[in-house]
Image (cartoon, rainbow, N blue to C red):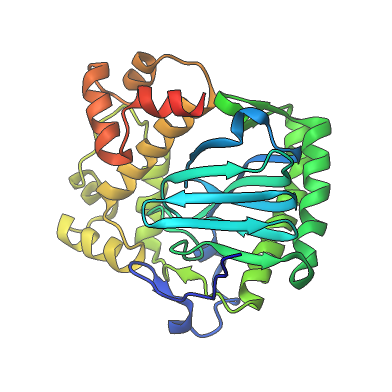
Length: 304
């Protein structure tokens, strides 16, 4: 079994070691963090997914109850056995599960507005169950609740749907899982990659960008009218505090919408393109391929 050691290497966000007391940051800092459960499953591996492309986004977490998994990447293979948590690295590859594989599988977001993850995903992280029993203790009730109250939907069942009551009920269980996952990684020596602190002006800009319809074009000069600073000043503030420009933040929102629309339902590609303000499916396809690496049709087909 390949092992993984804590890796504090960092390329864009500020490392936690550069902050004093990163567990005591202002609430508005953590409010930027996107925490969302997309999928959880507990049971025998689906036969259709034993040999399948591994998609690195969003974060995957697998507790191997039985069997093995081999991850194939361009630079080699990684093999993992039962009794371990596996958090695969952020790289396109292929997954090969043994036919007797049983696992508890999660897909979730824990990332900043730039798309940077809370913890580095440059290497696969492996955690023996006995080293972190709280992970399974938090994941099992979440999986049980989802199985009873929510329904997998979308291509390859990678999104959940349900009533408002079910959504409200699952919230504390998701929060519990995220907290245990975070505390486990901290306890093992992994440092969170942080952004911030975030100024009032940047918060105002972020709120504007989060609420702006995605089918409308965006120009950074619009923020000048909102906050009274020049484009260059706003640009510098964003780079310093959020690690991306306003335009990059806006583009990331659109990429996420497109990815989830392609994964989460059977809406045709032309409708998705128009929802994002593209005049033709072809222009949307070129944009999506430039940002994700696949055409929308290929991306959807691989998930089906």
